[in-house]
Amino acid sequence: ARDQSPKQLVVLGAGVIGLTIAYLASAAPDALFRVTIVARDMPEDMESQAWASPFAGANWSPMPMGGTDPRVRRREQVTFDKFWNMIPTGLVKKLPSKIYSKSAGSASELWWHDLVREFRILAREEIPEPYVAGVAFCTVSINPQEYIPWLSSELRARNVEFVRQHVRTLEELRPLVGANGILVNASSLGSRSIVGVEDAKLFPIRGQTVLVQSSQLQEFLALKPDDGAVPDTYIIPRPGRSLADTALLGGTFEVGDWDTSLDMNIAQAIFDRCSELAPSLRNSEQTKILAHNVGLRPAREGGPRLEAEIVQFPLRGENHNLVPWNSTSLEEGRMRVVHAYGFGAAGYQTSWGVAEDVMAIVKGL
Ligand code: FAD
Image (tube, rainbow, N blue to C red; front, side):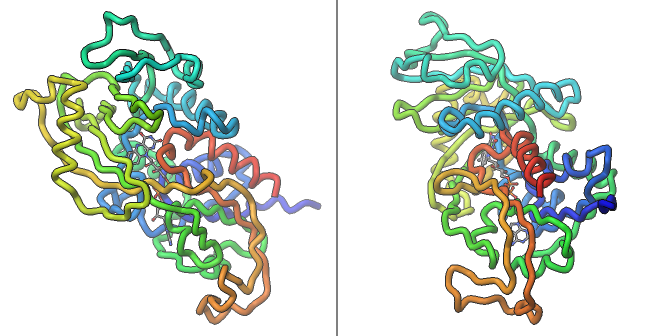
């Protein structure tokens, strides 16, 4: 007879990706999995710069990859629809939005026009100087400071176990995963150095932002650069159950930069650029500066990695001389691993679609 006892699923990483995967894995009514999360940074570590999730905007906004990769597009759609349905909970904000540009572009290049709600091209007279083109639509935003703790409390209510551990090699997880279990690797930039993964394609994209409070900011506003890159000037109003009317002003997109220290000149430049989009920001009676943030987006050459791998022990790294130090490391064996990392600037806005894809792979293993 087929073994019906729940399988052990170990999720490495407690960022938005790991938590959302654990949410789907533990929601299954048939309880196929016993879920354990192992992570260095936990949902309560919202000040730690060692992970990305506390520092996101976070809204759904168009990213170039969704227009070119159909798998990414599907994940974006699934996640948008999921967030949209969560608006009544107060964890997600329905967000009227405008993206302006300083040069006229073609609306046909906007692959996402039917993914968001209420999309339309702005008429000339609706566009403020110095912009010349623009679109309006409705998107969603979430507040990481509330959303991550919410995911975590849902998981704890389902008896998902959290283990704080800085994992240096996949070897360390063998006893927990066991012979029949599965490891989901959602360790983002950590996968650059974890022995047994050592993915040299991972790199950070530094993002500096300013968190403000202002009742005047009720729209997502962004400036689309002429070169088609991701907007680096944006204002994202967030939902706030405990603190209303906050918005994240961004930002920077510094490829390959690991520096998590604050640059005040950049903060000033962000504030000035955003004030051009929303002049009310300059009114100091209406605008409170709440915090300066720096976070590292976990990006990867060629896009995210979402695939299964059978890892063989003893581990052999890229460099065969670099074998791990554990005493058990020479024991033969295999471990089923599903990798889910490298989501760069779009971890939140693809999270539910990513978790669905991971669960489809996990169930087939
Ligand atoms: P992380 O949040 O980095 O979590 C990784 C987890 O793995 C952590 O728990 C960490 O401790 C753990 N880990 C790593 N290494 C180890 C190890 N060796 N041992 C044990 N545990 C380990 N995304 C959007 O979708 N929309 C936005 O508007 C948006 N805006 C952003 C704005 C800024 C300024 C920044 C910085 C990011 C933004 N993002 C946005 C991107 C988003 O934050 C990331 O894509 C997302 O948080 C990545 O989640 P993750 O779970 O993959 O990784």
